[in-house]
Length: 297
Image: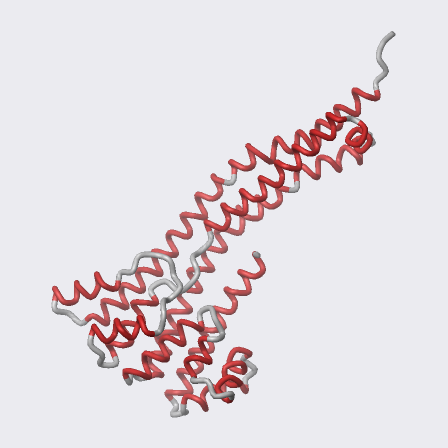
């Protein structure tokens, strides 16, 4: 799970680089399909897959969306920009900065989570290490577990506590991780449509047409648009400022979750891991000593 998330973070950064390269190619005068072919020739595996779909007859937006992840955001921005006639190179340049900023924020959260997560996983092995330690010290722990009902009950109870600790710890880690998607992307896409000359109603309609953007949280776009109407100021800059604030908020909340995680991980440690260590490590050794000591006559 950790390796997969590290790979996802790397792919997000790679996507930002690819989008930046596309923006440069388009600004230099390359046609969209030609720009994708040039990018594929550099060995970019996503571009290679996208070009193969384009050659199979799919539209560029559909071919991009099929890559999943942050490429869904790129597909939505591409479709909206081409629909309203917004400058595609400028849109992609802005999107590259957005993706890079979002990936940096997610990396900060992952780094903050790495230490408590690693400590928790290490402590989960402590009960099993206690069991092996008794065997290494010469205690007949295996015999006690097999022949003594109390020893077998201790092992079963300790194993159950270890399993519960693993499930509990995994749940805490899962809730502390960043939400999927790019924070502020809905605001960015509406800004793209408005910058291309679309009305607010049409911009919102285009956003609904390209599908929902995968990010959990409050949609602040309606409030920003209402502020724009009330204040009589352009909505584009307000939307982009709101998107930047969403990414900043996501970064701060992620760090706070990581900080709280260090304390919350003490609960499965105290309730499950330490009792499991006593049941798996200490109890079999004590039973081994008691059963091997002859009773006085």
